[in-house]
Amino acid sequence: MRDSRGRPPAALLVPAALGTLFLTLPLLGILVRAPWSDIGRQLRTDELQTSLRLSLQCATLATLVSMILGIPLAWVLARVEFPGRAVLRALVTLPLVLPPVVGGVALLYAFGRRGVLGAYLDQHLGITLPFTTTGVVVAETFVAMPFLVISVEGALRALDVRYEDAAATLGASRWFAFRHVTLPALGPGIAAGAVLCWARALGEFGATITFAGNFPGTTQTMPLAVYIALQSNPESALILSLVLLLVSVVILVALRERWAPGRSGDRRPAARAW
Amino acid sequence: MQPLRSLLRIAPALALLTVAGLTAGCGSSGGSDSGNGGGSPRTDAAGSTLSGTIVVSAAASLTGTFDQIKADFTKANPGVTVTISYGGSDTLAAQINAGAPVDVFAAASDKTMALVVDGGNAASTATRFATNTLEIAVPKDNPAKIAALADLARSGVKLALCAPTVPCGAASAKVLAAANLTVTPVTQEQDVKSVLTKVQLGEVDAGLVYKTDVIAAGSTIKGIAFPEAAGAATNYPVVVCKQAPNAAVAKAFVDYVLSAAGQKVLAAAGFAAP
Image (cartoon, rainbow over the protein chains, first blue to last red):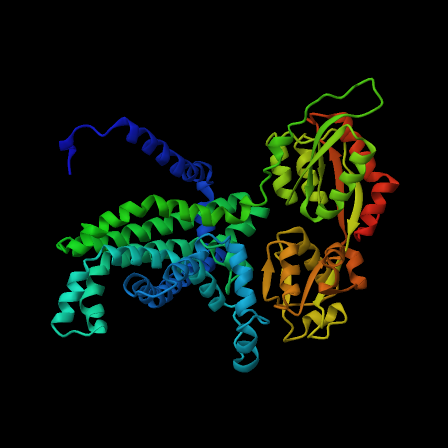
């Protein structure tokens, strides 16, 4: 894919450059303004390490839950014909447009101590989700899972159905075909969706602080720590943001390195289509 | 190379998501109003009737009260338009120090006012116009049977406080320390309204909020006054900004806040005289 078809047109390059600037300039702002001399000391503070660990744990758990529930959901949306499918798709992707704070309040109405389901959990099973680390995972999953569902559904739609049909003619059940034909071909789509989901969960603020509250060690993830710090000490908020950014970039790059070489031989048409 | 390409394709989305997550909480308190008032300095210097536009930056806790004062003030001065930008006092102070065209600043603490005065952006020294005291807020049915401050330290009581870095959290800590009480809150909320929400939804048994919040919440919660609150009253100072585009109207507005009529509105909302 080299420049064999002539120069890229300026009509595309100029807006692309502007877009890049717009997206990267705020990050550059953080890099320029960050009090680098103080960063070593800040990195060693217990508060930072606690909230960073909590952030990574919760985002990872939320991504796992999203995969367990979201991949089958994407499959249903892409492969099963039923009335109201468009409505279902709109419903499950609603958290994408819902302001996260509203999402948090909605979660309280559902899973809070007096919520529709939460009241039952609280009184009969003794489970209370708000103000617990599980609550953080619930909030992050609520906000981030639609990203995974959309990615995987898109990948499924691009996947050639004939592979599954062929499996069926050879006597495979739909469940068998899903596990042995669909899922492996979906790999890159799932990976991209999971990364998007993880990144969204890592940066989640509104739903988390509303539903799970803010307490160091149990529910105070990095974005919450950043916001609280911003009110008293903007410099330390800057460092916290920087750490979160660096950690996410390192992890994303590391993951890409792991996936890229192993899968380079993958020449399935489905994967290319996505 | 498919996964690599998928990742590259979503990379900009990732960057935006991370930043969006980080700033979600702070964006809402930003003064979108601070620019549009601008202040058209059409004051008739010699005339007795005031005219023109002023921009007032007021602490979020003054929301209902200052809306009323604004209505009364503009009724008495038909030629005047008042635009109020509500937000966290720290944020507002930072905006003013950064050169926002603001005429009047009303803060929720002496500390935030000092930022503007010390920054050389006040036309004079600030005047205190009200004080606010803490009350215990409990859900209507008071499930934990809270009656006094000491009850907050009982085990099994779910308590919400403001984070120690925000003014209401500092006041809470002061009150509890003076009473020699050690409490373990389940959450440290980012502002007093969030504490109130948690109480209103019944997610916690009690929270420490301002008396004005209890009154504003009406019958959705119950407020319990306690004598120890007097030791940690919060002061509300107001000042005309040095760069005020419309200093004459700004001065008149501040005088109105301090007048008997203004004080009556403040008292009705639960504020005490300074």
